[in-house]
Length: 468
Image (tube, rainbow, N blue to C red; front, side, top):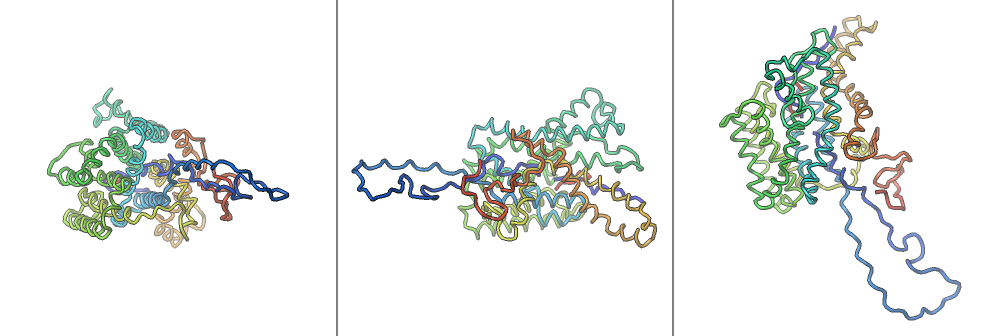
């Protein structure tokens, strides 16, 4: 008895990936103050007291250079939650998860905030850096997935949907630079194969996020310029565009329409990242901002109630509801942003996993859907165990099959992190690391705190194409 992982509807899977919010910043430093470890600075102990000779007044010490802000652990935590929610959604397909936590809106907002901070440097250099960090992990993923497709018998030059010949080969370029939609066969392999026949749809469908992220990065210098001159029109324009292209008032066919719709739906969240970085949200009275965000969210739910898709309340099928609900949700999350440098209280126990997931966000996002499907042939081996011949044992596995898939996919994701995650370090021009959870080999965390909690005295060195 076998269980195939079935696609869960139309759409593309959802972040992250966006890159960690602290990748461009050195670890925050704890500098010793003068005389911290002995006598006051500049004085030595003497055997007898001697009256000091008169000296000229010392020149005032130069002002200390302002410290760069460290990584914001609150934003890191949000990104980790978004990634876990994306994996759960693509496995279970629960529509209510899109309402409970709109992961893709959150991830685009966090990436937008980071992009606004980075654009204090020359724009062209920032764009090149972002693209460089994105492409190598994509190339590794594309090499594996395309090889599997070709071995499965797919020939893009004979695919009628791609136009055949050289035109079909051009479409494959999107596996190298995701400016458009990468092609894939909707059915591949056989029903008796290790992976079900729509595995290519599940695996390649997640690449819509990289396409949207790339276009947001390219457009960010212009968007930030517009935001600084006309913040409110720039902030609300994506919602207006969604009302036009996401409701059928204006229909743009094909993947071009999908790309424009993605840009509109999540553009408001990206620009909200600008507003967070620039301090616009902090200047609005909190009760006004929360009230306005609640009204926008209420409109999104009202609109969804009258435009339910094939999966009911799945907001991924309802662009205007997705845009407005995500927008209001992100406003509230960013309004209450506490800007932690360390996770507080009980959240501290998750510090290493939060650090790891942020360091490997692109790897986790790219590979999770394929690894979800890989759990099926592994779990199906359980039916071959001797004690599984009983009807009761078989029925128990049937009823908990999806739960076992959820628990099994995380070790597989861990294997992907170890196997190919280091490519993210190469792309960022860092030394490759197998398991970057923030702990050095000597047991000291990167922020300068040892495992026992004491501070260092020296300064620290410095699915079916479902959307998420």
